[in-house]
Length: 104
Image (cartoon, rainbow, N blue to C red; front, side, top):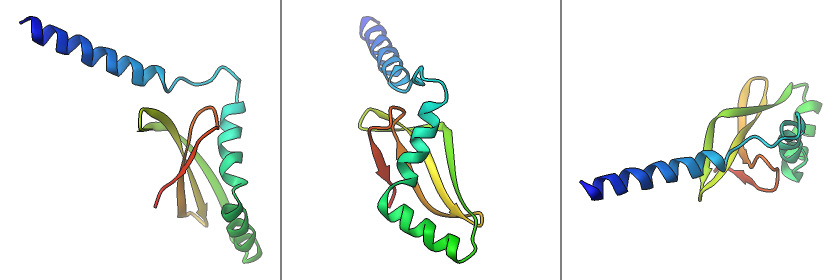
C-alpha cells in the first residue's frame, strides 16, 4: 500500500513539473510573435518563402499552442509553414523562443 502511494505521489509530481515547464510567459502577445518570427527568419524558410511568393503562392505561418509537445522534458509550441494551404514543414519552438526544432 505504501509503495503504491509513493508511486502515485511521484507520478503527480512529474505531471506537475511537465505542466509548469510549459507555462505561457507573462509577456503579452510577444511570445506568440517571437515563435513565428524565429521560424520565419530561418535562412531556409526565408528562401523558400521568397521562392513561393515569386511563384504567386500564399505562404502562411500557423502557431498551434495545443497540443503542447515535450522533447527531453522541454515544452514546445508547433509552428506550421504552409503554401496555398499545403503543409511544407513543421517546427517546434520553445515558449521563450530560445529553442527551435525542425521535424524530419
